[in-house]
Length: 169
View 1 (spheres, helix red, strand yellow):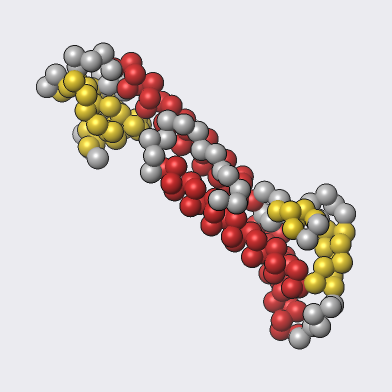
View 2 (cartoon, rainbow, N blue to C red; view 1 turned 60 degrees about the horizontal axis):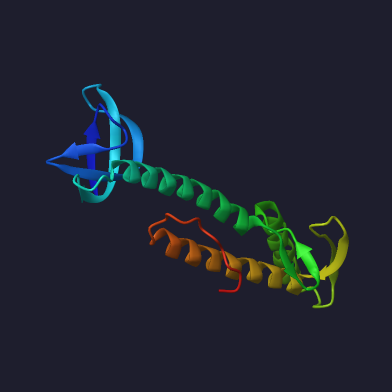
């Protein structure tokens, strides 16, 4: 990956009759206090091919897709999980609460059939065992792993298409 600095244009730099195709563009101040832009470059194309506009648009699409994909990935990770005929909240707070119940049940040797009233995603309650909460946590971990595997595969692509999670892959 090439990093460079330019004062004039944050979209395309010309260098020795080549067009450098930027992937990431950010404002930058060099050590001497000069303002400009820092590029992370995808590659180089001949200027004979009118690629400047395509390169800029592609770079902007890729950056937008990255930003959207990260937010989408994070929302997927914390989205409700359907399991045991119920929809379970699995955001950080819910997972911490599940962990507390599981740890308490384990530490105190609760019977497998002992239940707690658990508030589900739709705000109804369900008699739930520590074992069932463990199943929800396991499902969460498996889904999170699948999301990140698909996200990493997408990141290894050109990222010109949006990231889409396919459940069960």
